[in-house]
Amino acid sequence: MDDRGDKIRDRIERYKQGLPSEETSKKRKLSRTLIFVNLMLLVVMIFVFKRPAERAYHTATVEFDGVQYRLSMVRDTRDGGYRAALSVESSPGAVKTIDFARPLAVLSIIYEDSELDRIEFGDSAARLVLHPGETRSFIRRIPETRLREFRKEHPEALVPPRRTIFSREQSIPLKARLTINTAGKISTTLNFNYEVEP
Image (cartoon, rainbow, N blue to C red; front, side, top):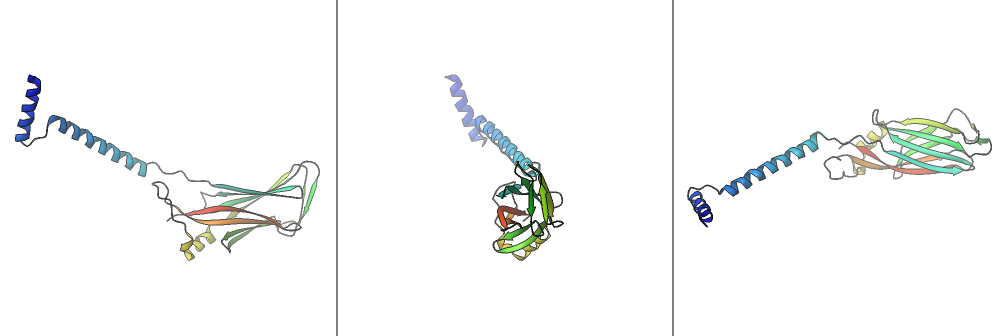
């Protein structure tokens, strides 16, 4: 009982002097420390941890007359733009001869109905002979020059960025349409987002 009475008297004395109680001052010290730690963690998250560079990989496949055509695209984080690869693979069984009009294939980069760029694959020959299960690859670089020009000319095409700490990039939704110049001209399309700095 005396302990409780002493605590009450002590509180009244501290109140008369304009000082907070001992419990309140301990709580204030603790909450200030927590706020400081939280602020430091936030600063570390924003400035130290950076989002790793994305190497977005896109692929589309179409098969025609026993031959599989695969278009693969990857963002070139070092030089900018994209690297596009066309793989032509014959099915196992027999030797396959493909006759085509030059070039073998055309890759069109499209925004809605506008063609932004055009890349050709396999323009050195008009015939491709593949052994059973053999794959031939054609690799081309898609420079970023035309994509940057399009971005400057059409700022309305930019999709606003997601509101996160680490992602500030805006993007333009594009299509890559591959047309194979064989009999009947077959094609396949893949969608990708061209990410740009705000």
